[in-house]
Amino acid sequence: MKCRACRSPAVIDVRRHNAAFCRDCFLKHCRDQVARAIHDFRMLAPADRVLVPVSGGKDSLALWDILLDLGYDADGLYLGLGIGDYSEGSGDHARGYAEARGATLVEIDIPAEYGFDIPSGAIAAKRVPCSACGLSKRHLFNHAAIEGGYDVVATGHNLDDEAAVLFGNVMRWDLASLGRQLPVLPAAGGFARKVKPLVRLGERETAAFCVLRGIDYIVDECPMALGNKHLGYKDALNQIEAQSPGSKAAFYFTFLERVSALFSPVAERDREGLHACPGCGSPTIGELCAFCKLVDKVARRRPAPAPAGDVGPAR
Amino acid sequence: MKVLLRNPRREVEVRGPVKVSTLLEQLGINRESVLVIVGDTLVTGDALLQDTHDAIEIRPVTSGGAR
Image (tube, rainbow over all chains, first blue to last red; front, side, top):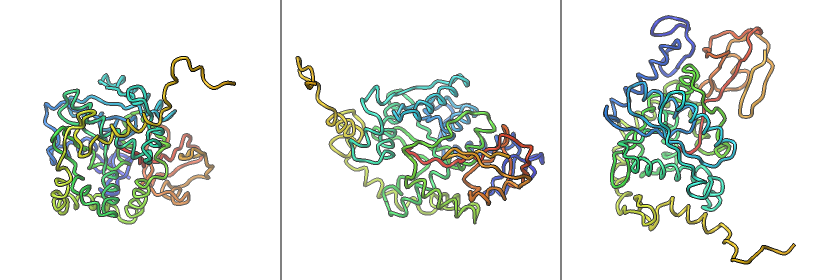
């Protein structure tokens, strides 16, 4: 195969675009797709201070790299999740990239700062690990952005992520989630502005970008995520994509163009009654926000400290 | 030639020459969900893998945790 742009030997084919690219033209293709998403959806202004949550994986590191190359003032945010060797490895990849690039990485260690790790938090909250992890990340990304004075949080959600989430939302006809599933969520009532600049790139492209750019990312999947529903949706969509390249992009972008606005009123109603959480000040519709509830449930499961003079059970 | 697979990490022995797309079909792997890496670069579906190649990896690209 030849590169579509320069006719050199190609190193990757992207069937969705019916195109193949050499290394340099592929890297340009990825940066162009991100720049186009930022422009088309009005995601970022040139002077914005951007916070990029980085896991050490391909998507977040590719995004951080591209935003820096495009000239944005982008800092990374790494959350220590306490998932054993996986968290140690992912942290090393995030720190390694930041150091090599001379970029600023903000770090929050959940076990050190909040007293629990994701596996124990999931047990305490009676949630699946990805649910406890997701709510912790959403809370702490938002909190870090507000506290740090950032204008916007840019996450590494790619086209495959968005198509799989859309598939799941449609399977359940979750109208409020469909109304919120946008590439840009404006700042409102204690929520920082959130954008997803990778929506025009599939995860095969973000992985290829890292390999060709020499970005050392964590390849192994999070052990907590294995077998989850989201991976099942991605597998189903990849089966369709293999038969009909471009299906995932058509599914997602046609939803944005023709359907998503229909569900916006449902999403807006869902946010009525938002107030500041008495525990942390974050917006919530409950008495406490979901993250403070999680911290509270973990604290209740912890054994009470031994009273003074108690030397423990007799042996 | 030896080919590295992941999740779980393992090696399979494959006889060359074989086209990348054919190899993926033989292994039952959807080409939309992987990259094929030879040395430090990528190869396209029509590339021919030879017995003389080393460091061949079929790397999954699907990630599915919470974001």
